[in-house]
Amino acid sequence: MFVIIGSLIVTVSVIGGFMIAGGKVGALWQFSEFVVIGGAAFGGMVTMAPKKVLIDLFKKMLLTLKGAPFSRVAYEELLKALYELFLIGRRNGMIALEEHVSNPESSSIFSKYPTFLKNHHAVEFLCGGLKPIIDGKIKPDQLKVLLETEMAKAEEEDHAPIMVLNKTSDAMPGFGIVAAVLGIIITMASIGGPPDEIGHHVAAALVGTFLGILISYGFLGPLATNIELLCHAHHAYNKAIALAVVGFANGMAPIMAVEVARRGLDSDVKPTADELEAMTKGVSVPAK
Image 1 (tube, rainbow, N blue to C red):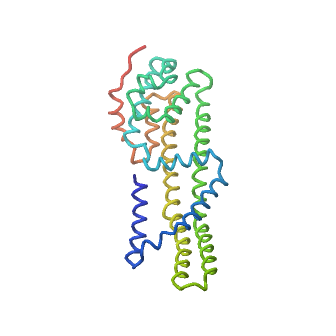
Image 2 (cartoon, helix red, strand yellow):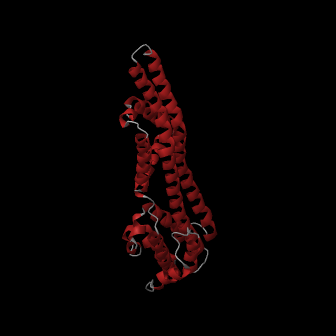
Image 3 (cartoon, one colour):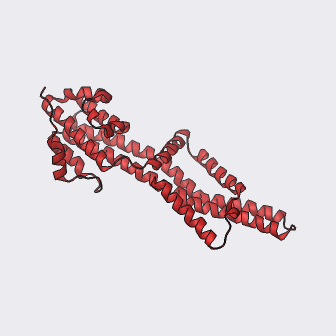
């Protein structure tokens, strides 16, 4: 939503200022310039990035319309879900977590926390972190390396679409110059024509430069930054899961493992220690 609002503010401010200065909006509508700049930018993206990266970029651009799903409520559900899982593991043994980790969609624990359950990537990350410990495939002190490796790879994959969008944004002024040069070529070819026709061609050429700069700094650059912040929010969520799981696997009490995760949260989503205590106070699990 804020992406749309921001884009509207940029558009209204630029066009509004142009009109206040006496400009006519119709003069900015040069379809040929859009074709040159837009086509060149898209062609450059296809050239520089493989199919997967382009698909990921498109998906992330769509996600910016929704905004980050990791609100304070989402983190509160996460902390409570982690605490309840750890409590079961501590009282009934790690094997008691197998039914929840193997089939999270039908888990009696995860069903209590719909916001977390809808985040399929986070659920998969949590279950993937607990499975090796439950199965006894690795030692608890080896779990940190496993999760850090997975998070590092995820960050690497998220960086590729952002890099492509940033490079495209940087190239837009250049494509605008290309469109402007083409317009000047057309102008020079009709130099002997009526003055109003020559003026129209010059104006169209200048619109190309204008569009390249505006699209770069007004839209694509900010959009790349928005995607980068969304990815940061995603990785921060997974980091909270990793901190709690590693702490619990290495012998921390459930409440302390969750406390470690809480302390690593950003201030806008971090509950206080008292709030965490109140959240977990009502959580209880039946004995085995």
